[in-house]
Image (cartoon, rainbow, N blue to C red; front, top):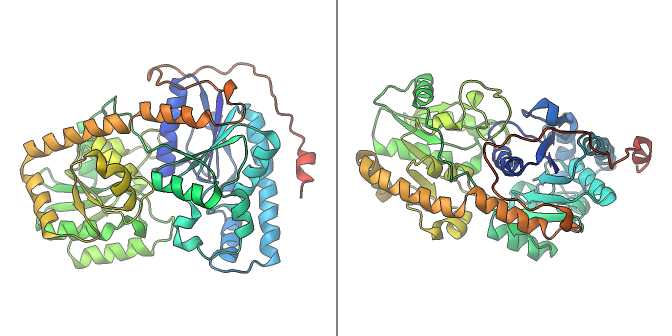
Length: 452
């Protein structure tokens, strides 16, 4: 099959990009080819379709969101702009389908979170018109985010976030999302948790890890605490600052690995001021980070997550809310001790499996600080705990789980009998060379354009 992934952005180290790269690995190990559609891409150009209008930060899209989010009345100009952008994106989507002869589409969060309303509407219409089999991979729903609770686009949200179509299967990343989706829309979804290839332990390049530590100015005896998240307020990074300050170990650096800017820069600026007040050495390194699970060449040549985890002594994950928790799984994969805030999905879907982590409930306790200090001073205990955590995750969050759940989701699609089942495949198998394939989709751009 030719698999087409669609989102606003496939670039860097945000959770959607990282998880989509893992899905692509599983498809490619089964001999399928993956292609990419987004407003920002760092994938192979030969397998990519860049539509700048699809980015959530595109100037027109920002104008739309400013006019319809946080208000209950939509001006006619906003409606016209949404429909105009939807038409442009619809044409891009048809060209993408035709160019790569797509057999199955995977929509990454664009039919659940209305950061790009025109793209969601455009894809819904394309799916209805072409009946292309598709999976909607929902990472977040709009009703889970406060910023979307007041809006002037209820009609569009009902139509496309998410839509009900016979050729569209729905996948969510936790059990609470499955229940809320069913309760609100009547749509049944498959839970596919975030995963890592636990059956293949990570390569440990200690030279690269030392290079990373050198880059952030860490001396050999310094402690490095890693906060593997984006810089947005719901990540609770101030709790990591509190922990480092409370430990009382002066030669400690707190490193934040992912980008700021998705929700503005005010939180990042506040964190810098707050860390300075508490005399915590806070380091942001996103400009040097890249996606380790992508098959593309590195855009940032210095470091990936494969380099920073081996160079970290401890991982902080104090999120207030997470759809699942990529950074938590990564820390377990790299066998690092972790402090986690007991966010709802962790409590319901992860904690009951038996992981041994330092946990807090919304605030840092003396017990948590003492436990972190004990782990730092007792490497043999730390190794035993992290190995046990790895084995639990290997059982529940591996690529085998991902293939099994994708198969289940595809079985619900209309006409699913023509879609092959996934196994794990050979990690070293080369991707097939594309031959001449019959173009099933005849694109009549004039006909598409008349829909408006």
